[in-house]
Image (tube, rainbow, N blue to C red):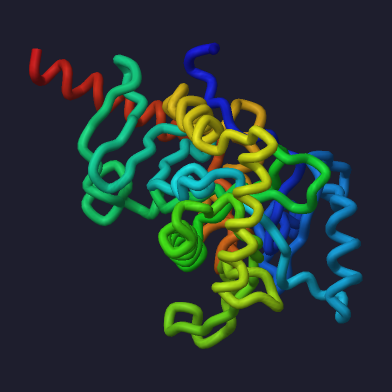
Length: 310
């Protein structure tokens, strides 16, 4: 296996609750009150919708896609949803630091280092809202591809917290049969003081509509028996995924980073939540290109510290 390359679940498309639009010469995230399922292909108007989008939208009855029937690939919740504090250089687009509140992997002039992670509120490097929670959820839609997934990315605390809790609870109550449960992504709304009483939207995970939790667990047990009788090895799949995710310091590939930074880590003006896939839209300002990047600032700072201690 090539070292330094994260081996992630095959991606067939994306799930979002918004889009990036161009206004006054600037590309900015715009929120929505429904899901959109896209392919991996873009044209001048943005991401091209996946056929699943139209199919599920028609079945919804009102044209609004606010729930998606899904399954997950793995029994381990942390393999389905990877969430951590992430800091990107918003000009070069490269990841600089990823941490879990205890430890982090950080790019430094001397290479990648493992360091303590005090969380964004107490981190000197994260001042100004540069570091924020970043989650990626992989789910299966339909039965055409047993290992192909659709990815939902978010920097929204409400979505990350809800998804993490649901995955953990469903794994526990099903007896570690999370990958066999019939589940459903749901879009929920709420209002808070920070949202100025306007509705914000986040993603939740429930058992599929029309089923009770007990019925879903019964179906999961039947699915598990069927898979085992056919030779399906879920334990080995989880182990392979864990090894693949751990093969690199950062999950995203070079070709994905530019789009991810544009959508979820844009250059901002004091906004409280970035990314159209989260709970709020943004107002984005442009920083002149002649300003040094965050990586250059870190290199300069590290060089200064080295000269002081020398």
